[in-house]
Length: 65
Image (tube, rainbow, N blue to C red; front, side):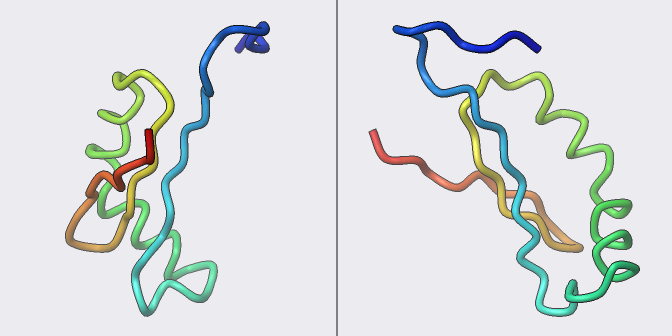
């Protein structure tokens, strides 16, 4: 991935684990694997984006601006 030059917008991509029980490594892995097909679809979307991820959903988080 190239580094953005001056004048380009932010290129951040973020998925935050929001499940209450995702505090251990294996619990986090379970959440990610349950939503893997949805996570792959995020790669199609142009950055910047932030998503909240738990075992049952992947939802966009609105960014200011």
